[in-house]
Image (cartoon, rainbow, N blue to C red; front, side):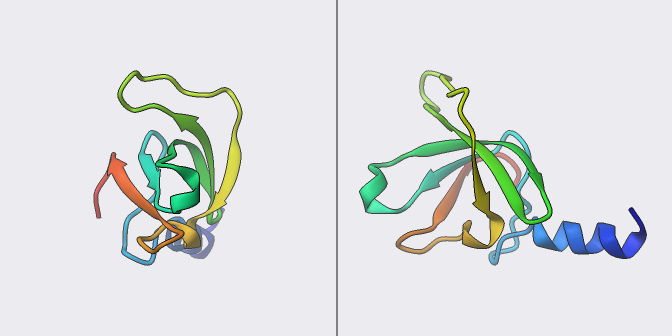
Length: 88
């Protein structure tokens, strides 16, 4: 990967609020239909975050993963909020 590709990948993995999405972070789903779902970032690359459901209180994490667009990971009525992990 050359320097330009590295910079573009870095930008693609940063939210609209300037938060760099990184492995191990815990995010809260703000969509009221999801009833307070929490996810842990398993991996992130090229603007896509692989996440698994988690319970931050007990430490339980599902083996199943799903993919989220980093562009959706911002505070809005159907967005996400960073709970634990790296800050901007």
